[in-house]
Image (cartoon, rainbow, N blue to C red):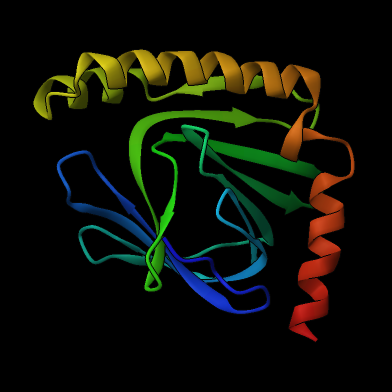
Length: 176
């Protein structure tokens, strides 16, 4: 597995368990790249859905991917604070073409006051049956929901007080 180069743009490819493409983010600037961790930044990037529809993100965002965690985190900088969207997913891989992961439906939305909601449990159950998620994957994902909730409550990693602001400042240096 390669390592994305800091300051360079990278695409992000999200797949479903059955191998089909789910979503592509056209361009994210790599702010930190290693075998274990990729932190990126983007603003008004084009997103292409599996059906070909496209849309543009509305605000700056800092992305967090870890090779040992079954989730990734997007911190979105809005006027009224930082919102987080957390995808339960496979750990990322980077193959030189794009940063890739499997999206496992469950999401956690975190608000600026650090309250949160677990989303898409019905979609997860439907896809778990349709795509035959193996029992070990089901257990890993449930464990990682708990881990993610601990991170939120403990303000760990991307949820730490200044994390998003610090990485956003770094992102702005690459945009100049």
